[in-house]
Length: 195
Image (cartoon, rainbow, N blue to C red; front, side, top):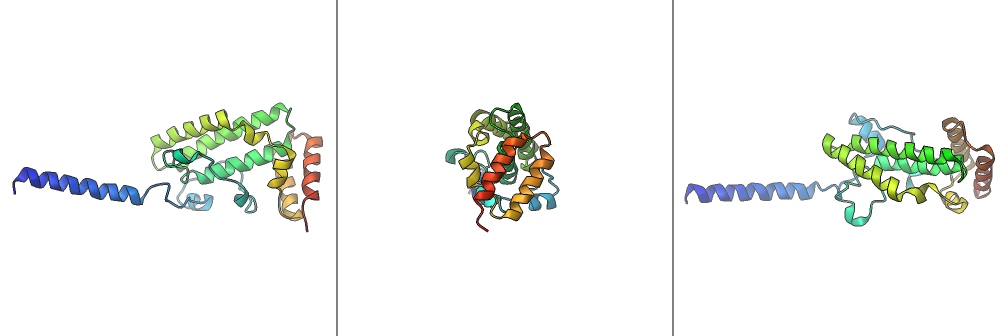
């Protein structure tokens, strides 16, 4: 065998090994890291600590199917859960006509951008993905913040104790809340709790 043929075989073998490794490590197949696991890796996310009862009720990253791998949706799930929590709390704190509702949506979307960039393995890719997520939620996410009472009740806390925690959180985090609207939503939530 000549040296050139051996070199080509070696390169082909090396490419095949790399391809297999990439397929094994595809983000779409990877189990998403929790916020606690990210903190153990030294990645501190901005935003509230999301209560355990809420996590099964949120969809994490609602990136369309074909884009999930490209946008590395599993990698950013912890950032998306914090974003979903914000988008659950803001409509409870502010009525649909309140300008603070849109202000809090922008803050939450920007926080998603920062958190999404933090969880990426590569700094450049992280910033790029953060920008894409920010643009995506700014363009298509207005429905997630403009929830009806029925949609809010679907994700209501399961017990009176967790409802008290939610009330405490919202009153603390959103001091300028629309009190009349807030009390109306909480009263409706308390009527739907069966304990």
